Length: 228
Image 1 (cartoon, rainbow, N blue to C red):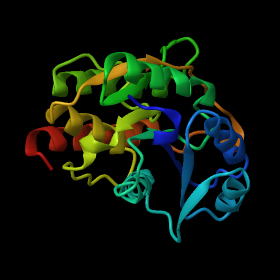
Image 2: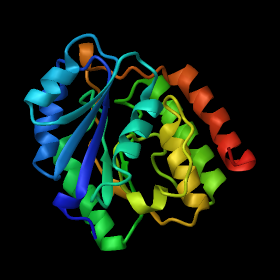
Image 3: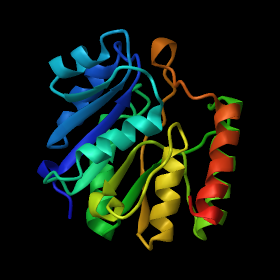
């Protein structure tokens, strides 16, 4: 059962100077340690994150969200932490929802808890609605169970379950790779309700819904059927 001191939050970030301190301080209220993986930012993201109380890994050049999270997970491999909390650094997730994921893990014994957003078509940008619904339907088919929000980057993972899983993703397909490979390994997957936020300005998501959804879907098929 995860407790705060045994959870390390991993926050991939690229040029999030405007919001990273708020994210770090909010998450630190609920977990033992916050680790920001700065993916080659040139706006002082790492320095601001450290000042807010995070530990930091810094990449010299931008290589993608998947590479950043793989670095963070590798860093935790020999640590005392039992769980990793993944949360995006762009302000799209509410740190106040962290207890919801922890409670779901404690109540169900799940190895992977995925934050589940309510998709309101009237409020969501059309391309984001389509990318999320298509991705979730594809993933549900690939893993043989209902997945409500396959692309959500807000999730809690039991680290032991990743020890024998090789991750290859470089970009946004990392969430689907983790989900598919953990499901194929027999891990228990559950959901926890979280809020949905669409920031504006510099805090907007850097994901390109159409292009990146196509990439994610193609990689998902490879992860499932070729076992890459």
